[in-house]
Amino acid sequence: MTVAASSSQLGRHQLGRHQLGRHLLGGHLLGGHLWHVVIFGSWAPLFLLALAVERWRARPSRAPHPPPPAAVPADRPGRRLPVRGTTARQVVATGLTCAAVVHLFVMPDHFAQSALYGAFFLVAATLQLAGAAAVLARPSRATINAVVAATALIVAGWLYTRVVGVPIGPDHGATEPVGVLDLVATASELLACLAGLLARNDPAPAPTWRWGAWAPRMRLATTSWLALTLVAGVLASKS
Image (cartoon, rainbow, N blue to C red; front, side, top):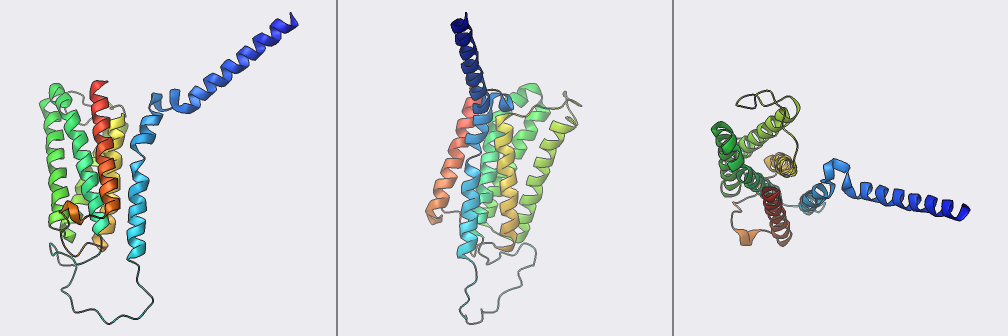
């Protein structure tokens, strides 16, 4: 009896440890999507590190420098600014592109639900792709301000539909669930807004739309970010 009881207690103890391990490994946290969030959110530190390295390399030196040549006032609306925010603007463009990819993935389902919902995602994706191109091809304070404001508005709309409810359409008043693709798109948009705020004060001296002109670390980070977004979209469409 003693040996059998000890074996039973040992079996229950091992089973409890096994269940606890599964819980900690994401079996129940975030509805089983813990590892999806970890994997698809792992690109954010890469871009934050790239921004930190770029700003560290662009810090002013203590050695004396000759006075810079006279420049055109930088705060005139719509004027291209000769500043150093190459990495920041590339992060803005990549974040907008990844968010647009997510919106294109979910657009057919929303068109099937309502033409109004589908049209919203189509317009949002189109504007985000256009904003990414504008930030790279025609860098200006006015362009960056418009992109940051529009992106922040989209994030606010997403948060409103998750907390308060859908304002219009067939699902009026209903709150939407939070999914993996939602997190990928919103994280991309938030990072684009943060990089846009940095790019306002530190833009690049020339357009950087040519892929070969990007730094190797930015090409690697951007490729990884886009690849993870595509994988997330494909997996979500099959589930």
